[in-house]
Length: 338
Image (cartoon, rainbow, N blue to C red; front, side, top):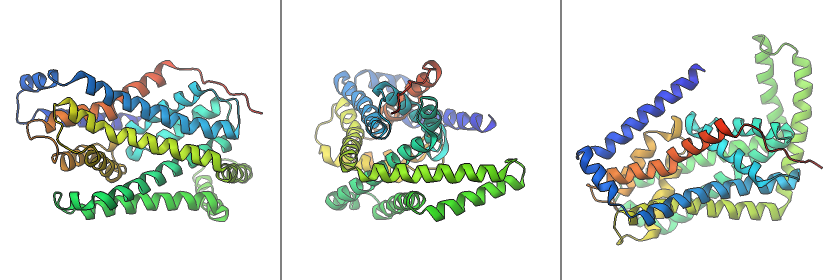
């Protein structure tokens, strides 16, 4: 509970920091006047792209769950997705999303080992597509950003290294049974020594059974090329929708000279570089990344307001609508397992 209040405090500070950045150099009245003049159509398109991002993520989760267990309703997958969006937003490194989704899936009738496999595969697909997507963009747009952003390649290398490390670690955990078993056995023994686990032998047996099922489920998912192709395609569209949001915010300000692909590439780099900032929602890093990359497209008078709109659309909307899901959608959407 104490940690939760710390995260909420960080988010409040981040919100004040965001508002400060948006309003610096201008009065609150001029900021409000600027926001009132934005094109509502393009703002609406930007928000609909965020909704599409959620729907496509739910589509990935739904496809894997239906393949593995059957009987899943899309509403259940969407609810699980929005729960993940909320807890990703309020925890450092977005670490709270998957555990919260795991609990919700178990309550809905998915076995724990199966739910773990589904979320692990989904995470691997997302991180792999994000990394390859960014490499592809870098290949075509490196010269554009290298000339305009100091130490661009250094930032890109950090993003690639961190993302590649996370992918490698997840694959190691997924495919190397002995490594996974030794690691979790060490954790269990440590917890037993401090009396957190009272029956370590029984817990180890449960662990071994769960690991066996986890690896079997994961192997089964990866063996189905149709599911992998479908979920990879959904993830590709999901990321594209997300990366296009700044372009339509740009158009909402009345600008139209920048290339949409340059703006998409900028958001891809911002997402990759700031995805592992150790604060809830990547606070600080996301705002700094936006300023660094998008000052190339917005004017000094509009960059702060653009940052405010972008952050509200891409982060605070997850916090708001995900929070509504957690608060008001109480009952898990049950599935019928074969």
